[in-house]
Length: 582
Image (cartoon, rainbow, N blue to C red):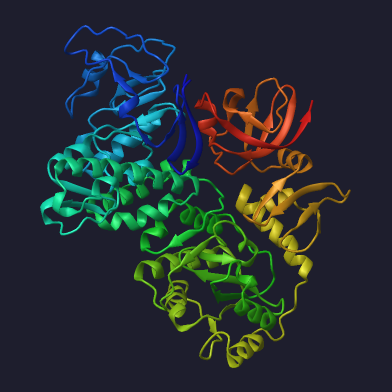
């Protein structure tokens, strides 16, 4: 059981933690000054030391050369004693398991940096084998240039070793790489070690600078994790080093590992500056849910529109003009990179209103293929009598590609630019004779579409077959026929927040629920991990979750994934919105 380490915040696999020593340390952090190594069992008959709460004691351990068979390592793996002070167990990917310590030291880390496949395999195997609320320490590898990606992969603790060694070798480290000291004509830093200028700068100063740069980079990384913006940062940083680029992409290939740890909603804006953004969990998850869960409920032609810089799109001037021309006679879906296809009902749903992208008027081949694949799957999954493409020329390379794949013709209405009078007139005329749907129908379909997206295909009809909507779009309140509130839409994220009545309807429906079994208590405010008995593996951070126990029925939003709730011994599992005592 982890006693001295607690995860406070999460950004994918990256975490903000609290290493609770006599003086707490906020992680990710350097731990050189608070680490006491009991030593190797190969060199002596080591005894378990008398530790203290001032430091983390690395328990007696054995190291093995890379490639040592798992059965050999396991045969020599010592048992870890049950101790009552902050402790760390040395593990390899083959021997990693729950030893009940607060920290796990991944051995052989220095040999992994430079081999992206081996690094990703080792970190994921270790991270999946140790408790989710324990710290993971990778010694001898951290530099200002790689520590952000190491944190992104799930590492919490580091040391100064590599920064010091490189400094003594005459290498000057920065967040965008390393430089030979002899090749520098000026110092690109203003830390205390660099104040004297290049003429007096020696290798001792280089060591001091490297350590200061590493500490500064960790401060930057912690702030990025708190703000949910670490991925944006490493996409830019990875361009400075081939290993970083390869490792980020190999991590992207581990979708299950990252998806389980990536929140469903967040306030942070996604900065789409490279094609690598398309591989982000948030983007892939949205595309998957739109093509697999969403179903069009409007009896109207599909009108494809370009996106807008303003989010949500309907607040933009251009979409206001499109709306007047369409006049409730067509169903709108916007095309955009990096999101793909956004039906009008989901324009508020994260990340559809939480991104910004580079606008050049030209699409890369990767973007074209990504959006074309989503548009093709979307049209195949939804029955539209007509498809009207009111999009500029640079979008038409996508629609034309989909036309060829589906062997059907789209109708194009843009004369020169989508917002000119001629283009808007063409759009209006293309919809002449189409019946109008009512604004209330749109409001109802918004709720049902969000429910499908959030809870699963068919949830909209199962949970909200008979309901009324109050308040103005997008701040909708959902009530049933007896005027009992079932849910409210949260406009910041475009998701539904259920009431107890809504939660009971969810339980009574055929839609799979996200359930957590709790101990015999009535939660107020939050549920802590020690109070969790069991939880659905499908629960993700941000999910609506039903909590049930002998004494209470409650609804809230998850702060941990389902597996983390079950396997953690510390931390807030969920915030509780409504609770009913049994």
